[in-house]
Amino acid sequence: MQDIERQRTIAQAYIARMFMLVTELRAIGVTLLIDDFGTGYSSLAQLHRIDVDVLKVDRAFTKSLSDGAEGKQLFRAIVSMADAFDMKVVAEGVETSEQLDILQSLSCDEVQGFLVSKAVTAGEAAKLMLKRILLPHRGPPFETFVSA
Image (cartoon, rainbow, N blue to C red; front, top):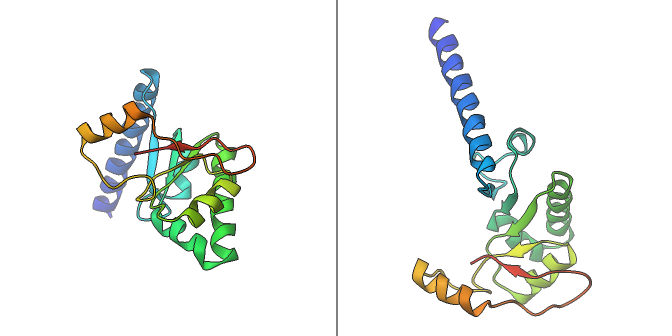
C-alpha cells in the first residue's frame, strides 16, 4: 500500500511540474498544441487541464471522413469542442481533395498531409514557407492555412 501511495505522490508532483512548465512556456509566447488528438495519451481530460492553442487531430479521424456521416459527425464534434476551448484545429493526414472539401465545410482551421506536401526537411520547409503556398479558397467563410 505504501508503494502505491508513493507512486501517486510522484505522479501528482510530475503533473504539478508539467502545469508549471506549461505556464512558463505560455508566458514567453510559445504556442502549445496537442498532437495526434484522439489516440494514445491525447485525451479529452487534457483539453480542460492544459491551456493549449492548437488541437492536431489524428489522421485516423481524417481518413474516416470518407466513410460516411459518422466520420463527419465525429470530426464536427471535435471542431466544436476545440472552438469551445478557443483552440485552432489542424487535420493531420489530408490526402484527397474530398477530405479537404469536407474539412472546409466543417470549419477546420488548418490541414496537414500529402495533399499539401510530402514530408520535407527543415530546409525544404523553409523554402516552401517563403513561397507561401496556400490552397485555393473553395467555399463559405474559410481561411485555408497550411501546416507543413
